[in-house]
Image (cartoon, rainbow, N blue to C red; front, side, top):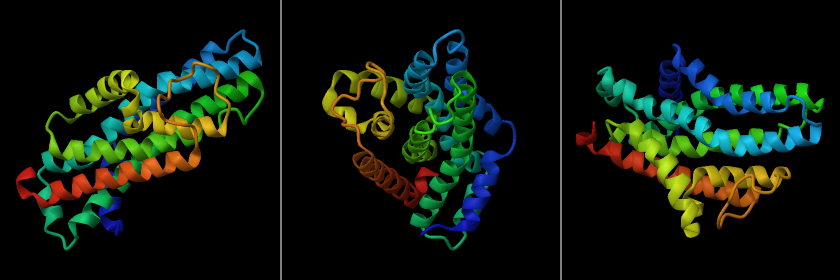
Length: 244
């Protein structure tokens, strides 16, 4: 199913250099803002502020960080002229798709974990509780799983992948699914927040889930559907040699 050699190669290419640290810094924005906002506030207000900022600010910063990482995993190989050499290896296209997604998810997870850790430390220092931010780990990792399944095939299929990804994040998730509640289930962020909301008590107004109900089980099923759909699209694209 997954080719470890290909996954390691793609992960190493994606995570080296300044890009990983830059995206980790971007993913840390919500945690840093939460820590700054907690100054001179009670512990209870600081905790509410953390949850609110995490579900709002991270919706933009974390998704962009994952977009940059996910869309680059095959785009870098294509632009560097090395993708045809990878294609000649005896690896099935389905294994190729799974390996590319796994590499992107692993690299994005590192950036996301650093971003989450900044908020965890900030809340620990500000409130004295080191468990407040732990449920948010599910939000960060769920977002990684879902977004990479979308952004990896976008990065392979389109030259302006970042612009298309930004349109998905800000236009589709930010606007369309907010007004058309029936489409809320197609939002990766709302799916990730539904898992988060089932693990901790979010303050009222932290986010509008639309038709999505809080729940770990339901959220994981939706993520499985998203990943399956994304990998199927990438598999189809990899089999079409004119998509290279």
